[in-house]
Length: 311
Image (cartoon, rainbow, N blue to C red; front, side, top):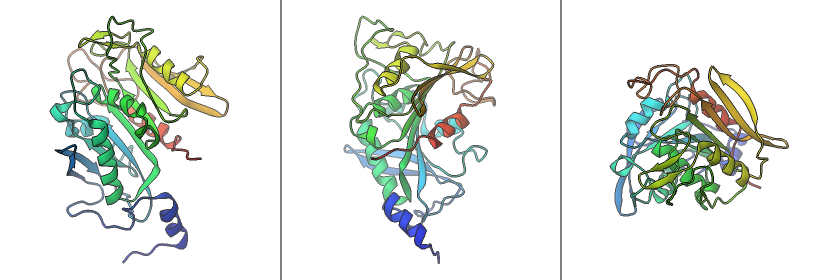
């Protein structure tokens, strides 16, 4: 039998979801990953859920959604992002949605309603686990990074997720001809304080840092993409350049006491990779190499300092 203090019960009542106090679903245990299937938009869909070692069903827990890249899977994203590595994360639930045909809404030609799928996962997770609704975050790689932006721009889910951290994101815009430095980036977020931290490599030959036409649509330059987020968040167009590691800087946008609400981590020499100092499926491809920094702890630090503020 488990007991909770009055303070803990108050925390659950005020800051948590309906799954608080419930035992883990059958077959799940702390420190392990399980596959979950749900119905969404008349389709059977699935996601992986990692329950952290320190999960307690009476303490509201942060959640990270991590979206795989095109032609990749939920399983490969778990191996890539290292968010289930106890060296980096022992406290957050991690959700790995599986895309239909291994890709996501927002990619040219894709008609699957993955925004609805995400909302359905969120409802399912909130019913099963003790979740802190102020600390639900999103990251992803490539097509999955682009889908992070789709969610951040959604008028409903932009108010449900606290912060976003796309890696090597593919931010397609359905317009041609493509002027990558000025293309209009449609976006309808529900608030003007969305934390956005993007990562991109200068040698990315898949989703170019300089943007351009791809799959008969337009990719913005990455500086244009991040400057537009600074503008949406009512920040100054000027940024502060902060060295991170060899060949790597953070372009940080601030406003008053709000430090680092929007930022871009730019590594001049890596390609279409999840930055890591350890070998992974990206940096072991011919022509790629280890990064001089790890993106994962930077993402986790960014999330930790940017909970959802509800006034």
